[in-house]
Image (cartoon, rainbow, N blue to C red; front, side, top):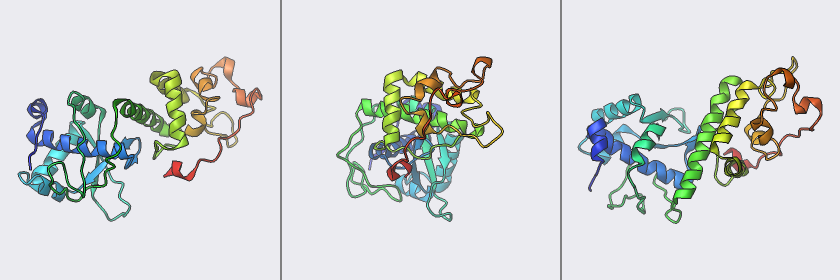
Amino acid sequence: MEHSFDIEIAAEYGIECAILLKHLYFWIKKNEANDENFFDGRYWTYNSVKAFSVLFPYMTERKVRYTLEKMEERGLIVVGNYNKSQYDRTKWYALTDLAYSILQKENFHLAKTSNGKDANGEPIPDINTYINTDNTLDSKESNCRTEARRCVEAWNSLSEYGIKTISRLSSSSQRYQRLSARIKEYGLPSVLSAIEKVKDSSFLQGKSSGKKAWVITFDWFVLPNNFPKVLDGNYDDHPDNQKSDVEQGNQKWKPASKLAADEWQ
């Protein structure tokens, strides 16, 4: 089995880091292609340190653990735990924007695999092995998902303002389709700007009155009639807009219809 790495990445971060970074990128892109393991606005892959050392026999478990810790410290990966069992300590890994920018110059092709084996016919231990080889990511679809991921990350940053976060966004869901439509219609910068405006609106945060108030949700935000009003600042906190359109009765707000079950997977 042959392993390869980028020389420039190895020179900057070390050979072990370059090897593991490419490996993680490979499996995360596979999961993105299959729309699997998407949590908290990112696609993830998982593996144990022991399995890594088996896959890369020239790295001891200690070396693997040390390299992964250094990659996290240098902002190349984030580490999480999305295991179904609370007793399962297997770590999950996602790449940061820094890592994607570094890897962007490399044109990694996702080789077809079968029966849990890599392109060289070697088994891949203790890692997600199902791959939909019929679906390859073209650049356009990949870009759409990257933009959606950035929007989810921006939205989830509103949690400190009492806004409910998104744990999963399936590309087949109505939620994803509506978000993609807003990005296509207004552009990614405008969508991110509209999300930022939630921070400046007591009404959208449910803090405009003493009684229990309505709080904006992502599904309400991406509706075609609601999004432009947020973007235009109709709900911003300023003297001329102390009451929102909803409060003034200029528009009767209706909550978005209940999402299909697959949107909350």
